[in-house]
Image (cartoon, rainbow, N blue to C red; front, side, top):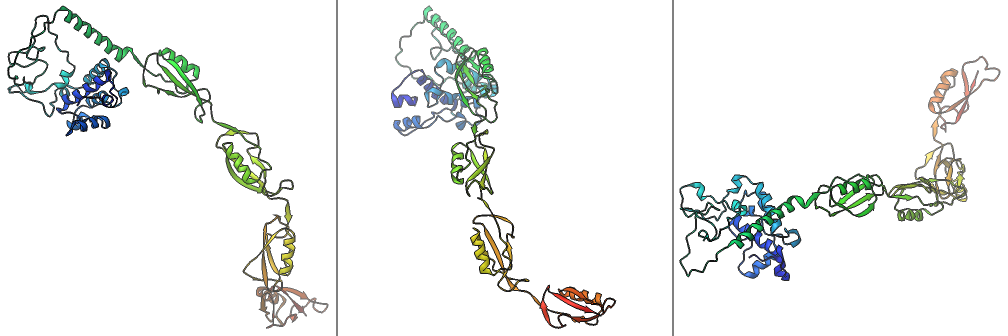
Length: 471
């Protein structure tokens, strides 16, 4: 029940093995039971290897957190985590005890044995007190109490506990008792002095804390460590977007952590932001330029296109920032890509569709015909409009969309003969026609329409011109 994992697995034994066993005993004293139970020794051994000792508070709700921590430290399955010897464990025990209240110190374990006493206080277990109270050493010739080392009063109650003394074992053959002479006293005194010195060394004289070093220069950090009695360990450098170049980013152990005096502290010093010199990708195909930028730790950014008589279509003209600029790693780089030499879009409106298609294709442009046709001044089958318009600049391979005419819209011409000139013009224009006046010599001073070029009731293309004769 008290074997440490390394004893079971490797047969290893050092002071930390005893610390583990002491931690198991402490668990028993606090809870009244062993931490690992099983139907066979093999089951118990398996639990020591694969399961942590549970916190005492799991068995005794309300038990102080400090006692849980003490048991966990002493029974850590990894030897390096445990106190390295009994002196270190004693120091941790006294630290834990100093934090406990009288009520916590007097708590009764679930399986504590109470005596037959009227005084309620005499029936209270003080196991946490007994844990750290020094035992009185017997003097030469002192036969000790009922347990061989603790004097008892008239009631048979040992002073290290307020529990009643359990019933004595049946009398058996008495063994000869060893007398403790002056040498035993000297050894005991030296042991107490040594323990006291060890506790002071563990608690105060041996440890310090890592001073505040973050955002200090390396020289300032070295000075502070020297003042704290610590050495500078390995110094590494790393990029940082937030810490200025030459200043401390982090330490190992971290700032404020407990560390032995004369130990070393590793420093990580900032080299500032990670920077990259922008490579020259002008003249590269777009896909190749993107690959080069990524290989340099940069991100290809927005792509805009521009005409160029020198750079072929699809190749990089320039970048933003400019080539050779030093930028932070991971920065986005905008690319300007060539659309090739510009093409002046020819005017094909009014052309037959076949002629318009041939002219545009010859200029290096693609043609798309809109599904919808429209009425226009152009005859049916001719190009009514084009997008982009004539005179625009396009790149080779760009598309021009053509809309085909259904011919002009025919509408009925109003009859305006006999109307005044103003009324006739207003009527024809409202109907969608342009108006032209013909006065001649006889109509210079007239104000009545005598004739119109298209008789009233006939149809004419919308937007065409109707001539009126005035007399």
